[in-house]
Amino acid sequence: MSNKTVVETVTALVEPILAEHNFELYEVEFVQEAKSWYLRVYIDKEGGITLEDCALVSDQLSEQLDSADPDPIPQAYFLEVSSPGAERPLKKEVDYQRALDQYVNVSLYQQIDGHKVFEGYLRQLSPDELTIEYMDKTRQKQVVIPRDKVAKARLAIKF
Image (cartoon, rainbow, N blue to C red; front, side):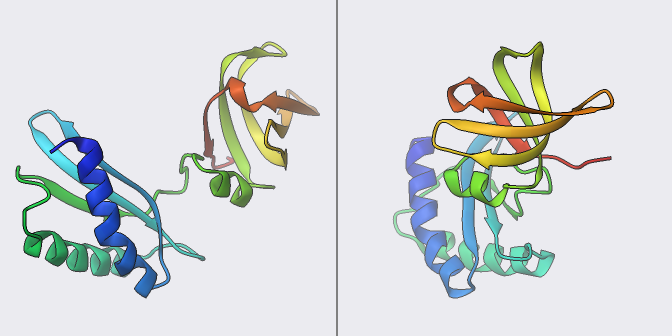
């Protein structure tokens, strides 16, 4: 079974579990690292996910996977259920919306104003652009970044 098919199957199995508990699916990935396979399910909810939330979803999803016929994942794998983390990637539009006025790290494909990475507050968002307010040495500045220039974006922790 292809990785994409596994992800689609697991997504279909986990979404009703998450809906029952008012959790949301952030991402499902099925990857091989060294010789082991990992099925990672990232979940979230308003106010953040707890360890108990992860254990609950892990137990219920594990039961679903074990009882599915045919087995959606015939090879051995490790199931991991977790939060996307404090420095979660911004992938979907809803992630960007939630990140408004939050501290973010944005990496670019090519430089803008001599920088390839900006870390600051996401102040504005449009379908085509992001506006980041950042500190350049001791001066506060804003940069407008075309979305097609964004290689990666994530929440960041300000120290």
